[in-house]
Length: 76
Image (tube, rainbow, N blue to C red):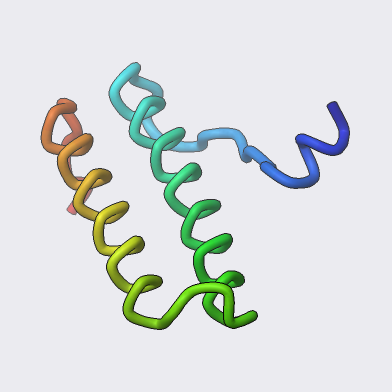
């Protein structure tokens, strides 16, 4: 379990506690971890910059769709 916690750390949520906010927070943390892996792959020459860009763009679009499906209020 410690290896998994090291590789995929999760932080606790500190905002307004609602099911939708928790779901979005979990998805946002997963997005962040995937972007880190993609960036490392590109930095080490395993994938091209264009492939890296496209993968991150697709992840962003997926995160945006998830947010649209949830009842999350802007805190402005």
